[in-house]
Amino acid sequence: MKITNLLVYPVLIPLRKPFVTSLGSKYQYDGVLVKIETDEDVFGWGEAAPSKNVTKETQETVVKSLNEIKPLIAGENPFEIESIMDKINYVFGSSAKASVDIALHDILGKRLGLPLKNVFGNDKKEIRTSITVSIGKVEDVVREAVKIIDNGGRNIKLKIGLNPDEDIEKIKKIRESVGYEPRIRVDANQAYSVETAIKTLREMERYEIEFVEQPVNAKDIDGMRRVRNNVSIPVMADESVHTPEDAMNVVKNDAADMINIKIMKSGLLNALKIADICSAAGLSCMAGCMIETKIGVTAGTHLALGKRIVRFADLDGHLDLKFDPTLNGVRTEKGVNKVGDGAGFGLDVDESALKALI
Ligand SMILES: [Mg+2]
Image (cartoon, rainbow, N blue to C red; front, side, top):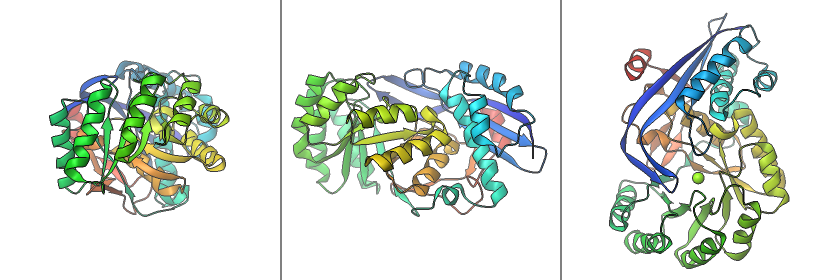
């Protein structure tokens, strides 16, 4: 089998409501869907969800990178994923390359006639996902968190980092409203200083926080280790880990208890490698996502279901989109993600709906 074409579809999809974190606000999703065609009757879908803050990419850089990648992969055997990813490794942009990685895996699964979760190891049938609450006024955040739980959600992820006192107040009030059964995790997206992180997280300990994501700057590995050594809430590295080498750096420095794996940061092949590093080092993993269509979130869910070490999921980015051209793929019901038995990622794309979003 040979790759014959790489089709690139930039999309603009409005969000249901603004998505606010300590890194900024987002009102629409501008990502890129890709389709890799072959000389046989098999094709694969992939997605790039660029982020100025996390992957340093924009929709424009993704399109440019994919145009650069297109002639490099034409004529290649799509099953030689390691060799293809190595060949395009120098091209700019982790999510651009991840879209190719995802599409190649989709082709592999389809040809094998297996869902990718089985190819990855088939550890579990479903995984609970957190539902994210943006930064906002205390009363708005509490109201939204309560609504998520009332609608059957069991795990909230609270974006924090801009105002430590309000961060604590939000959690106190959410606990007063929903009790201690629902899990609450928090994500500071690098916003705290080491001192503020230690002080604030110690105040939060009494509210049973599942873990804190990226409390301090991504480059401050030593600072993250100091936070970890001074608070009882487990620390999860997110922006600090893009590659398997980054994961090794966190492991060597004892800087975190857990790692958030996102295919948009690492690609899929390297996501599997990061999971194996964590497994060997005794760190748990979460499969996370950006705001993405169901293509990206379905790929993340297959990863989570396939690998035992992926014990947590934050795979809710598709729920923020007003429209999604993806057919089938992941189903999120009452805060739990499942996939069907379809080969590859078990999804398709409504190409006429897709054209309306370009
Ligand atoms: Mg995060």
